[in-house]
Image 1: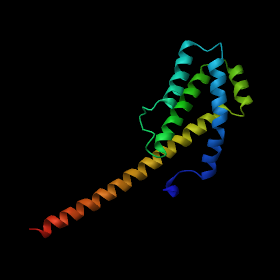
Image 2: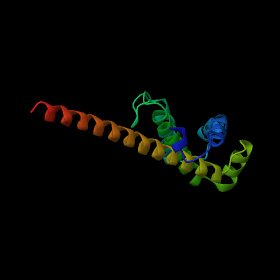
Image 3: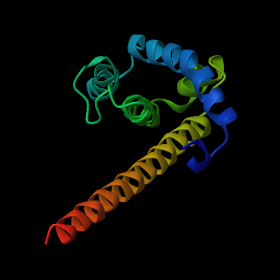
Image 4: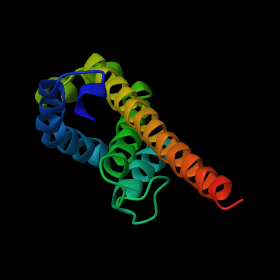
Length: 144
């Protein structure tokens, strides 16, 4: 399946290495006094989704179950920083060696990966079902 992914392994490694920076940025934002209630709700929603055992794609589904958590958190982070004081956010991002562009790129990476995995999974499932159907049809014809 790895040859169907749209990017190289090094890009995933780099994303994984940025997780601590995203966690620190989230912590900084949570403690930021100037966040509006709406921004706090958005950030809390993303972090709550990450911690919740109830997901759109359950965590027991390998890779996709984790990627949807990452995607939700990154989208919430992006929304919160979009609505914050630009100078303050730029300082927070710089302190974590992140940028707005990096967040956008990571969101795009996760989305493309999820699409590629879903497409490959659907293809494998379809091929499997087709084989089962053909085998069943062959049995039915043989029994006539």
